[in-house]
Length: 276
Image (cartoon, rainbow, N blue to C red; front, side):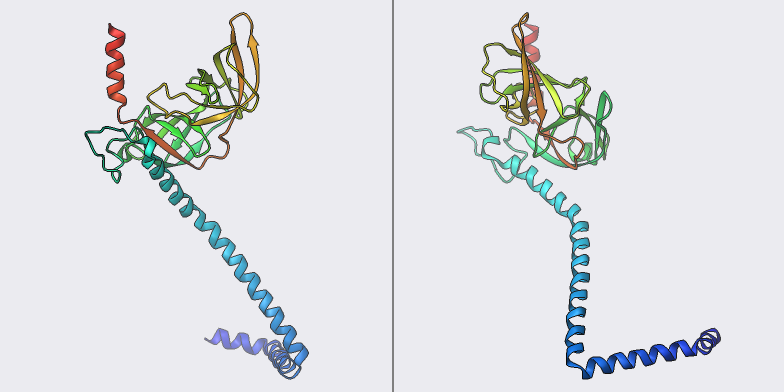
């Protein structure tokens, strides 16, 4: 307390000057209409500017919550699409329970780590086995294909990115349904290459390339990209197709992990067929 009093006494002239300035300014504003209106307008603009800045910060920090909500809603909507349900005349499925009678189940997750500058790129997700995510499940976004779950712990999972030279995906031309094998060449994160499309297949630059559905990992017709360029290998009779990816792997935030409930049954059946 003594220090405060000593400080005030030492700077009494400064405080007295500020007091007179405040009183003078108050009198000027109170008894001069022009200055009064100018002050009110200026203070209003200043307050509005502060509120705008505050609102911008509030909206920015609320984006995370909004994105998480949208990701959950997208996953639920994908699961509840009418075309995703099995059809049996003798059995009525409960559409409110996505775990019953569906071809695919979609679970939202957030990307917490991602690489694009290696030959073997991986992503890390903030969901794991306790959230129903297991190795072998496909990963997609609203924009297109992402990769395949390789490992999962209780709370996290690692995903082999489509930008991994070890990953091959069955893909097809959306217009003609001709299918082949798609892989990354280890160069640009914007392009992959589609092989084994026969020479008689109609091709046009700009045509869409999608998942073929001939696997137990990805649903059919998930967008991969569009044809950027192509050339015919005369000796083999197949096209080499350059595909520009629809997914921007340098800007991934939220994804959806795809579960195929009937995958084990399909694998067992195919194993029996291969043993014949």
